[in-house]
Amino acid sequence: MGKGNQSNTTGWRSNKWFRAAIPALLLHCSIGTVYCWSIFSQEIADYIGFSKGATEWAFSFAIFFLGMSAAFLGNVVEKDIHKSSLIAAICFAAGMAGTGFFIYYGGGHQGSMLSLIGIYVCYGFIMGVGLGTGYLSPVKTLMLWFEDRKGLATGLAVAGFGAAKAIASPIMQAMLDNLGDGGIYKMFLILAVVYFVMMFVGHLLLKKPDGWHEPQAKEKGQSMMAVIKSKPIANYVGIWLMFYINITCGLALISQEKMIVKCIGLAGAVGVISTVSAVFNAGGRLGFSAWADTMKDRNTIYKLIFVLSIVFTGIVMLTGGIKNGNGNMLLTALVLCLIFVVNAGYGGGFSNVPTLLSDHYGMSNISAIHGLTLSAWGFAGLTGNQMAAWIVKTFGTPVEIEHALSDGTVEMIAVNPTGYQAVLYATIVLYIAALVISLVLVRPTDKALEAKKAKKR
Image (cartoon, rainbow, N blue to C red; front, side):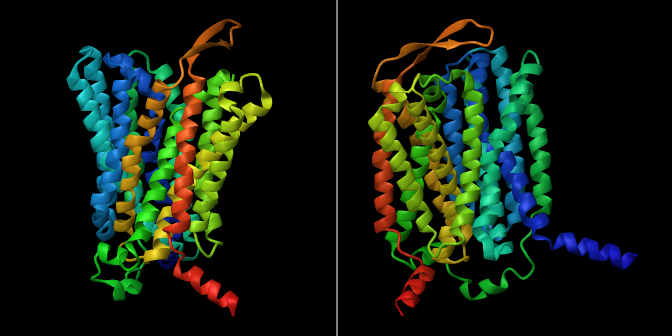
């Protein structure tokens, strides 16, 4: 009886699903809710007495500090995943609770700069540190446990980050609708506890496989920069740039997604389309990375993502889909296809970067190198949304369109179809630049070169 129990205990303790996949999902499904910002940003602005534009910087800071904390704390993750995952749980939950407190304070002190700065610090900086360390902590562990299917494993976890929005959005909306007066700050305080429990359980379960360090013995002593310089520096610069461009273009379109959907006459379906696009985002993270496992060079996936994005962006540009889509089923379908393709490519870019880096530079210091590369996400968080907002504000003029409500009445919605259409001109140029970078700067992996030589023989 005792031996049987011992065997069962040993079984789950050495099971890759319990020690890698499940804790990764617990961590990523928690921190991925940062993308639910659009659900409650207007409520925060109204409650504390500031414009939506002023509060939007909290989200931009969160993504920026996600990238920066990943870059600067990558070595901590490399050395001790238990310390980094605990830091992630504490910072993310503390950031949420602090955000709730400063929203509460702002409700009683309308227009107070203290409440706005407090939200910037808590949601932007403290939560940002939790995001960066929480995002990195399970990735190398997954690649070590799922050595033969690294793409599938990392895709599964990163898909959790993408799917978090689809899962949490209706829950958050229900809480806002049912918690009464001050529901916005109550929601943050409740979720801070829920997500801390989820992330703490993930922290306790997360474990690298026994003997994982043995294959790395020959590589010990090499610094992260020494590993990167083992190949032409242009190779790493190319990976960083195409990752940055893919995120910038994705955020530029995704940040305007709701208004674009309203432009093409689907204002009543915004919620449904947002959920479907989140599913494509998560599906791209899992599907593209699993597909890449079958390829000799994972960079092929990035080339495919950029080609698809260029094709669909070009079609919507040439047809004026956003400006002319209202009432035209074909143009409406093309715009929706563009939204879904960009979401899938945006997600796929995230899930493939750690495995692409490991194929080029090996598993030595992969957490630190991946963290440094995530700095691209931080900078894109500041530039993607803001670039799109500036283009929409600068080009075209707002027009009012009719939107039929469920009670049969009609309301007028102000949109700027010309401005949203102009965003595509910027993103297609950037996508073309990314494709050129993936073709010219990013070299084929050793595996791909060996396969090419074998084919010639």
